[in-house]
Length: 383
Image (cartoon, rainbow, N blue to C red):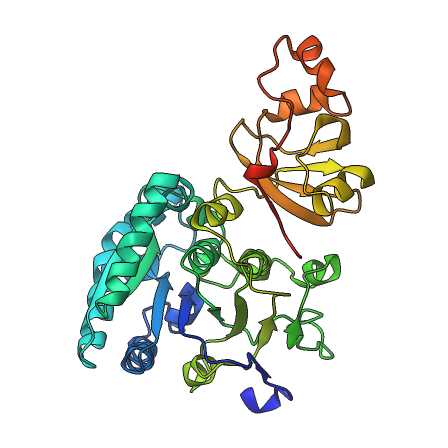
């Protein structure tokens, strides 16, 4: 219960632009049908936010649940094609419900169906961001969902967590609010440990924090806490605060829109001033599970000397990537140093790592670049 949360963390400022992520577990009732009372509360609270001259972008799940209700589809285990079909049926129903409730408060909505590729491709990202900015200027509430009919990643995992964090970062939101069916991040699983403690404030996502985020999806959602922690990490990279809290609790939106977090608040070290291109690099062409490991000399050269990453400083490669992909740069302890556009595919990086620049042509048979990642295509992160 909210009154059992001993300390409610505060942002210290009133956010002007927020991204509000609503997962399936929050949007549905116990019978797995859409909770229209909750959606009406969202419509009222978000409309009030716009009336105050502030802005919100909603990232919603719920299309599959809406389709299930319309078709009376009660099969417990559903294949990916069945989920896609349910999403196709339910999406129009979901938006109709949102439109109906927002109209009660004199507010228009706009539907956008996106995929991660839409935000990772430079041209499509710019087109999307221009459209979103224009909608917000018009006082229209953008409501975004993953296009589940054409992409299946969010049906398998994530429940729009990643999409919400990418949007928060690229649309320069100050606050990402992830409403879940749990109170926040606990140090232990509260379902099995009576002494589990709610972590109310996190300033750095460590391995211990990642370990606390047991991957335990809810009945309807596919998110689990791990995907929410990764979403928080990405939003923090762009300087956004993140709140994970229980969306089922009465009055929760009034709390978060006032700059308070009755759950777990993730606080970035500083708000990075990133250009549009830099934001695309940090959040483009997903760098999850793709990184290069550098030695201490390379680490100092990157951070202190602001140098490019050369083969001689690379000591390891994780994952498979292609030339032009975004990869993380990590030290030997696994700490992230930054991200950048890589000039070689993963197989070639493995072949030339540790080598001098003069030896690249001898090893690969050609040399188009000397740098694994050029400084101009690299962002050093503070986390």
